Length: 59
Image 1 (cartoon, one colour):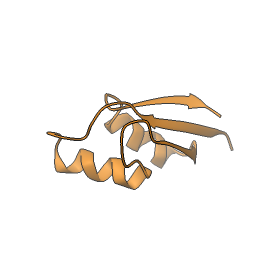
Image 2 (tube, rainbow, N blue to C red):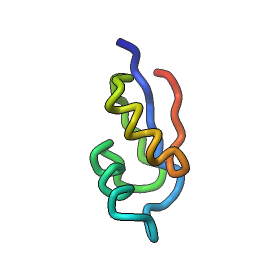
Image 3 (cartoon, rainbow, N blue to C red):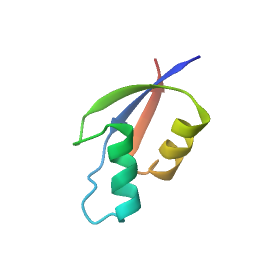
Image 4 (cartoon, helix red, strand yellow):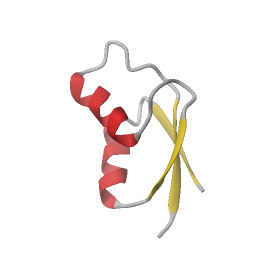
């Protein structure tokens, strides 16, 4: 299974509660924070919901 790196590039301030919870579920806490996940459909769906707040790259 491939890995994907997710980096938060924008703030969660003034975002909806669901977007904030999605960032928490991905393990992102602040701008510049990077986490690594398996590229499962669940993770890719969460990234798609907050794609305007994060950047991704293959690990």
